[in-house]
Image 1: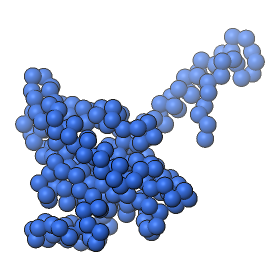
Image 2 (image 1 turned 120 degrees about the vertical axis):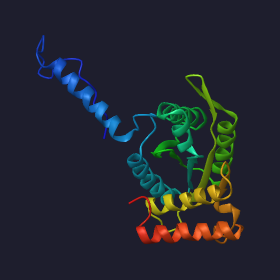
Image 3 (image 1 turned 135 degrees about the vertical axis):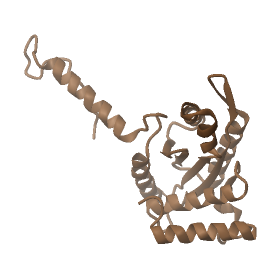
Length: 233
């Protein structure tokens, strides 16, 4: 749908139109409400609803064009400590800094989202797995090297990353694609955090290559998703 363009003259062709200013005000309010419906108010990134919608569109584009779609899921490490130690205002400042980092280092066609809490998602259209992993590694290093400052308080921010790619051959929904990337994020946390994990680590199943403790945790996480229908219902 094309965006509404405010008229410069009265719709009825009258001079000194009595409703023109009210019409402009209504159209501006509609524009603002559309933005609110698809963006996160704290970070200015797209929200979960917009992510699911965009995933559906990009996955369909992949099926038609065979151009891959990649997804990065990331979670800030021990974020609760920021709030507990420094207060929620500091935590909000950290989230805003992370959002700014995304905006500065992704392409215009990429879709950065705040998935919820301290979890973020980056939807990368037309991007192969190797390219997405390189971006995740770069973002991981940028975050790890930065220091967030707020009201004379300073803290280091790190994040764990899970990366997955949809090539159009799998029978996936947006929700199951998200779950696959989220499982690799879980593996990253199990491996000590501040790391990037992805499906190229093994061509069999994500459990291969994990320690016995990590494998048990991964299987528990997967079976829990199966019982509850996942985190994306």
